Length: 501
Image (cartoon, rainbow, N blue to C red; front, side, top):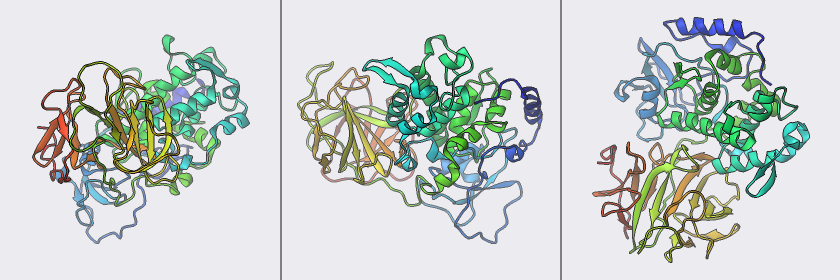
């Protein structure tokens, strides 16, 4: 559990010294915590060329693109030097050695605190029996239940359900709960810890379920904001900000963002680098996270590519591209999903007589109201390999868990079923090794040759296939109409349509 007031003044003084410095802050490596070296090990052979003066050496991490690395370091892409020869792939192979100008001033410590695979619903969760783990610890969580729409539900089941739905590792959710309120191994000590177990002190956000929604939102903002390059600074609950060290990994940033959202800078420093810190609590509960990560990371190995996928409707039909890229699941989630609506003779909800098809073949591993999850490698684990998630599939004629569906075979009818929907459509998103794959990023969403591009205005991105450009719009118009081509064309090279224009 987190420390109380003891030691806060000393830690606050340390942070003030850190923030007043004109150079990069001292490393937190001398503080007792569980961390990893900031620079991951590379398998490449170093060249004899020396690093230029004023440059930092950086080894790319899983999910990095050159554009995002440049944003993290505050430089232009053309200022970055490939130390061992330029890489052509959009997604940089992990361990690619880069020389980058050192331009940032005051930044966070650069220690890697939590691996990516312990934040997302990664292969490391296969075989982890969370419910048994919670019961064995016999803390408040083991006996806690909450009234949900489906009835009274045990707290551990609530956590696991949201972990699966949002693709968040249940281990990190348990560790943060234990640090903030002691719920996993003991009992909360204050009324705030009872009512607000994840530390969000909001009168209308009491109880485990609502607190979980808030912590997951912050973890996603941090993880996918860092992955996309849309996040460069922490914002603390007192309104102050601090630039993130550029060589952090997405998992560490996710936890940093969550802690900052409920903390002052001094409290943040204590939570991450002080006595009984979050990394220490995490290790005490689950062992060495970096040893666990070594068996499943990098989550995006060198050479990872999207398998061939088709638009999720039959050839010859004219559908509408109604939204994208947008949240894969829930509000403010990663922009990993695309929406398509069948031809309709009226607005509103119902069930279309048209069929939604499997963009790629796979095993149905999870279902629910409106939900179909396809595991493309067929191993039965949603946490491994490529996965496609469909939403708003009508229960009528819908495929069932355990069915194998080949590419272009029917999965069901578009509808409004499941989630929030005001019109009949299909929602489709990708995951790889448990991480939502951004629709525009290192592995762009490509369906029948149409490549997804984001745009500043929400839900109005584009799909581009050669000279064909389809503009998303929620209500549909002549620009949103899309027909699946009989011959797959190549998406444009480079960033010709980066702005969707």
